[in-house]
Length: 306
Ligand SMILES: [Zn+2]
Image 1 (tube, rainbow, N blue to C red):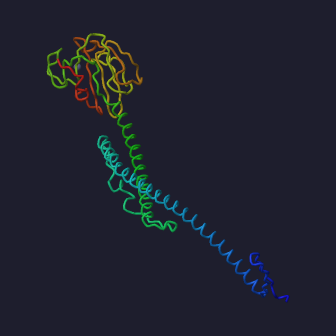
Image 2: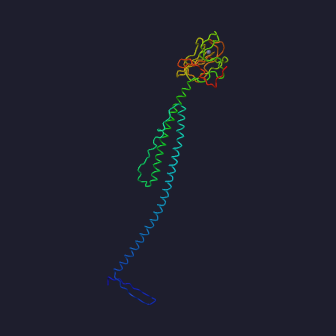
Image 3: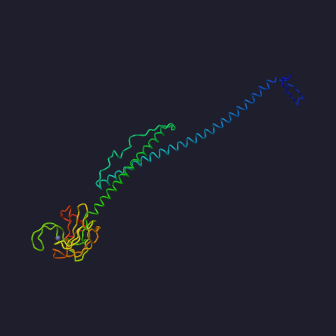
């Protein structure tokens, strides 16, 4: 009796009352089945919901990944274009080096880093295409860094060369000491205007009114300023690099011995002192002690011949 379960069925319609006596074990079986079914349903529902969310998340990640790969490819293409456009800088570098008489950088040196593809193992990247794009990006960045560094170094060398050349140019006689005035007697053998003998003339005679300002033809310092026999009042400027210029027959000297002078600086005034018959400047250029034709050291645009 105790192991049985009584189920009373009532039907009002038929005015019926019936009592069912079931074994208690059946109750436990039914209860167990019910609980198992309920729990299974809940678990299935939770799993299904979770799968849906995971699927949604996966779709989102896949989309993001696709976009990122597309962006990486775009960066890769852009870097390759930048690499190609860098060739213009190499051409420019060669032109500058030619202009400044410097040796070109060898193409093999410019190409350093090219050809050795980096294939670093990246286990976190499963896709081979993505791996390839990343490898190419690393390679492009390395090549560009190398070329940029080389160009920077080259520009520094070119700049130093320019500085050296500018210093040499500023100390090389190259302008007219009496701008706009005519050369009335050139360098070479001539009939001397005083004693009518044929004699070597070691400079240029430039006619100008007495008192005309005489300009230094390059940077340097005054190595002589005073009376010099037949030269009369004379200024000699030492420009370094073996160059010296002499300005003779002056009326007045405006600089002193050892004074630094700049190109275009007024150093004296035209006169007719010493062995001279009329106001003019006797201009000489000396290279390592040799008196050479000063005409070679005057810019042609400034020369007026008589
Ligand atoms: Zn002369």
